[in-house]
Image 1: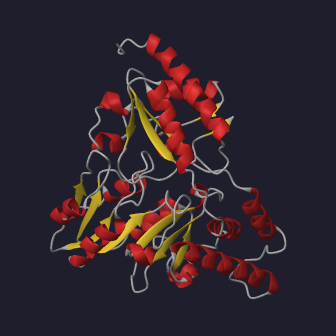
Image 2: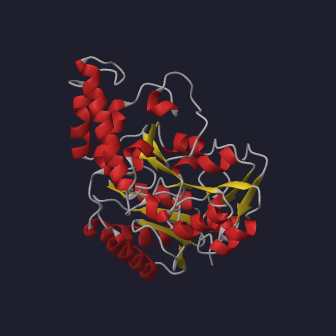
Image 3: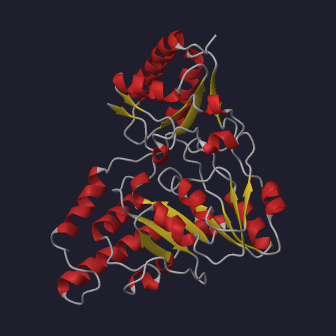
Length: 365
């Protein structure tokens, strides 16, 4: 099975696994304990904190470990803001959290999936205290101009949070250059196990804890640290990036040449180097996912967190697609294990599967 669904989750690499295993044996203590076993665990947690901080370009003291990107987003959005601005293409971990807040303005993207500084400025108010806009979209890969957006937020005195879950495993990230105040990270999007993540909290920003108990993570997140997951996240953060843009471009070019009417969503905008979302008129995306699975390729018809949903992707609707068009999209997300041979084979499989499904489709002419 050739795996092209890395935006849903990434496999744990052998080096990350090797870094994690000692935490289950020789460093089995509670990192809050003062004996040797506990202090060994504490040393490994703090080493991982430095590794994550190095990947993001910040101080280790500004890193809070969480159970994943969802918790990191929820913690960031606990900030007691009077008015919040967000975008229409956010992950549910942000969108549904903000649904519970009263004063929220949602900014629409352009047809490429970009939030422009002008659109953000039009939504800002004198009482805006927080802006939350994702770094890179999980479905079509558009990378937002965070530095400009954060600067616009700061002009009115608002803090800027970004759901960065898809970015650090695919591209260089420097939170200081971006100018963000809060930035969420997930381990399983960058070759670490599921169930661990982190939130960058700029020095001086105060958040209300969402979990209560001990004084873990500087009092910002109670609960004994997930030492194996944290160490794995640190090891993943220290790995060199592999640029998959050339393979992604070859995949897109091959599919566009082989499949009439195929359209790349977000084309022309800055995108993650591993992500391609392609619309295939006249068929249901989930039918194509199943057809490709039977041919030995794992792809996705949208965000994994929305699998099984009857309604089309809100993010695809937000960039101007109809419900029918949104349901005909497939996401291909590459990882470091994918080869050119797999890409060539996938192009052929897509062409054959689409041709077969279109013959059966009552809506394709």
